[in-house]
Length: 504
Image (cartoon, rainbow, N blue to C red; front, side, top):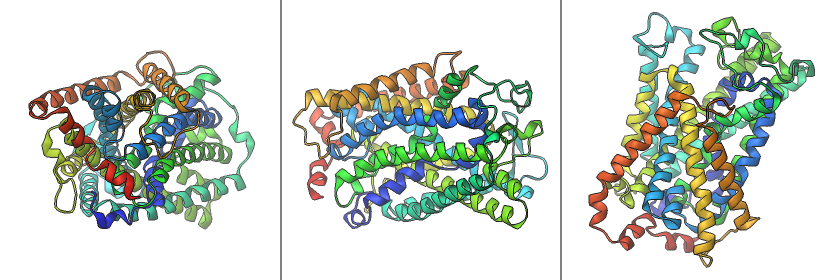
């Protein structure tokens, strides 16, 4: 998506809205009560996102340096290709692609789920079938399919067109969140935070359908528990590197938007956890509807409706709901675009079949976008029963890619000290080592049973299966690589890079 006319319209603000909007989607409105129950309360969950901030900012800083130094579609894949080789590059790229494309059907599922709560008649009657105990209705399939087709049509117009919509929706999302936080503080009470930590309430942690199984038994464990899903809910910043080829103006500022979007997203989540927990008894807020809880989705909107009542409560309900829907589309739109560009970047270096590198006369990677459309269409047919495991799988995929990007920064600082770096991160190689070690520890813990970060058996199976598929496609593409020299492969990945660096 890189025709010259569009480059002028994609500013640093556009990239910030792309990244922040992709990160802060609908989760703050529909998943925030489950974050509280998973962590044993809003306070440990909020602190958990502050801990996630400490983990994520060094990783984001690695992207901040590498994006303007290597401004090509592919992000972490391209960084690993330059620092190591095609083997490491395909691991990083395919992992990130797995995270990206798992979010696309996730959003297609959520749109039907949220609208089903707003318009109960959409899910009236018997479902066509069930997936993991959750019914799938014809009406929700139709809605998900139509929305997927609309996003495909939008992205066929190029990144600049998608960025305009992203900016508008991002402002709606942020405005709704801020208003929700203020409304919560006005009517709230600190007693609603009590108990500060608790995983013993039978209404939350019993057994059977609808209950949440706590994986922690103390405050520290509750704080760390957020890290099992935080990578999923903080992953959108990786959309920024994918679109850097369409950047206009100072490329260095594009890299800085990566850090800004991550930092503000962590703070946004933490503030809303503290505020919504302050507004309503958190254990009632977090009680699953399947076992008598009243907080139907979007949970944040429902809570404010109950807190205020009357016309004020109804207005707040719709404002938060509209903000949640805006966030849903910012994430869906951002990852739709980024997934196609990442797949195109991998195909340029023949890490994936070269058909996905094809672009039309306007620079749109049509075959890659079609893959994203197909995967988006899977969501409405799969239903909400797979969301939990899809979330954990995506988080593990992202952490692996982030880890390899952090190691790439360290290696490039050593092997290419003279590489032109428009921006050098504070702390230099030491910051790179810190990001590498932290992400490595989190990645390992995701696979270790019995700790708060463990992602579960099904998510592990999904992760292994996905990486095996990537290996197969990489081997299939081997015949295409054998017909090219290393210089040609390198030129494919970094096509036009130097020209873009010096255009700004």
